[in-house]
Length: 286
Ligand SMILES: [Zn+2]
Image (cartoon, rainbow, N blue to C red):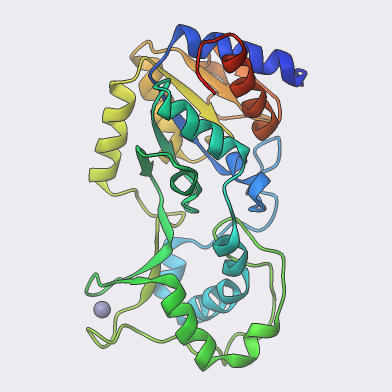
């Protein structure tokens, strides 16, 4: 259903939720755009800007890490300040009402949890912490950023458009940017505790997400093009298990052929109308 008016879009989704309660929800960048965090892809599923950092590039190149952390020092402020939007709030509410069994998110912003969702699997990790790739030490990201700012004070004045993972669209000479290593082991590389493109989701996390899809009566995809296999695989899993799949997303997704219901409408406004529709019919308490 393309460009459906919001009331109709919400009504179709409300029917789906009523038929298949105990949904597992799979979310992507489209649930966080209302919170000021942009998404990576346009309606056709193509990159909106240069593709993000690749895992091997980050691990193998000091220059890449200088560039990454210099840009993050500017861009992460937006991510850190972001507050849950209506999509996060409605999904948390639906979980509290027993209609949603859990959320698997490809986002690293932690906004589902901030909105009150309890069963959340952060498939690609959380941007708010960093991990030493040598000894495994974990550290809060703002703590590393404080150290980065102390060592590179002139970078703090910069402003640039933020990108989805706290990166910023900033071009400069990064060669003088100082990137500290892990003090515990003396040499380890700090990396955001997120799965970069080109890396794999940890097996234990995939297993938990697979189980969450397994136990659900149906799957609802919200705000994701599912272009990355790590999310797409759960649509495939649900399809193979003959579980109905609904999708609310503006634009093309990789799993378009697998849905029983595809609704192309704005994510936040439609979920807001969905919550109102469910409340209005007494199917769920507001
Ligand atoms: Zn270390």
